[in-house]
Length: 529
Image 1 (cartoon, rainbow, N blue to C red):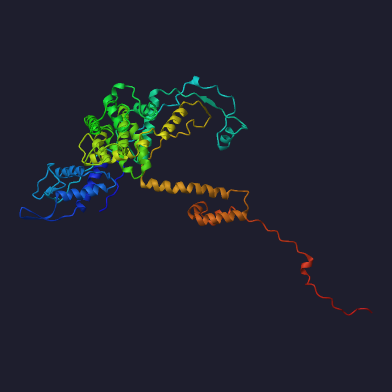
Image 2 (cartoon, rainbow, N blue to C red):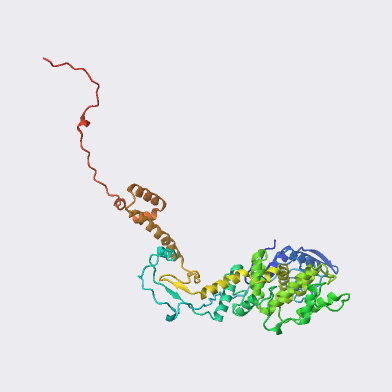
């Protein structure tokens, strides 16, 4: 059974858990083992399970190649607690799994986690200001011109240089956009763009949109320095000075601007341990508990790198400014340390990059409730953030430009003509209404036949078309759409009305027509007397 990519959407962590259990049960080799002079059929040792599952997770595109053996042991502990596996004596329920030769087996069935049952989602429509409720004194007096119907020809005339007849128009002075209006526009368009990238019908199952603060989005976009790092208005929420100095020291090693005292052997490890302790004692991860599901959902797009980067850009905009700033500084430090060859080794057992991911992954992303794969999912996300930190932690310029243009459009004074919609470029959202099968069939038939019937009537009533050409077109139409043709011309007599017979005048008889064909001259006898 080959592992498959679990895409974005609700309950992605649960789907990954069930997928991993099925792969483990379907692929783990089982054989006969002896323990304490007794044989056990179809079982495996703890070390064999760690070896096989570790290899599976590292090569599974849903997880990171940097999954450690210790993380695999932690996952097997959760398997034992949830009765995915049991020891050969049938014991389970405790996380006392260790990487040794203890024997385990699969129970008759491994419980898969059910998906939470939620009521059907309803799309939340964010209300915008009603631009039709405009005071009378905001209009210019009507231009005394003749009222005309606005059609395509007049639309062209209206926008041409030589205007023949100007329709009645008025200047529309839009109501002043309040700060609340602008914030709602930023929130609505940002979430709509994120939903489109993820390809979901609704964000309700992966994000509580009521908890999204539009003030955070706007501050994360505009209040930034030259490097794109958020500038906090409340300086009390800044990182402690000693933590920031320690991060700068390792990020710029060996050129440490704040380092004014000589170092000692193992100095770098002590500095790193100081940073790890600070982030490890935070009460909430930097990506916050409320955004756990949306970031896990984005992990399903990592095979499409461009879409994943764009989605993570928007997700990071939703963070509180102090969290976004800490994420920017931490991920930048981790990326620089991983690529710094001059920095001494910070750990003797694992590489520098793996150490970065393993140390800070739960400080960046974890669930408030216990999620069995949260550490593996966090490691996958942190690895991707480190590899693409320059792009992900910057402001999405396309989204920013689109929202700014929309706000400017709403503030712009416009000319309104009768029959023309001022906001034609910004159509209101449309929704589908479920119909019955009979209604669908009726609409399908009539929706196609009505235009065809109009076309047939146009051919039949065209007086400028020659009879020969009309017969030719009618014959072709009859061959292509016999049902429509028969409804219009049920009998040959109804068709013959279009071609009345003309009275044919008989040609005049000419005298020469009765003469015999030209005969050669023959001599005849003369009747001379």
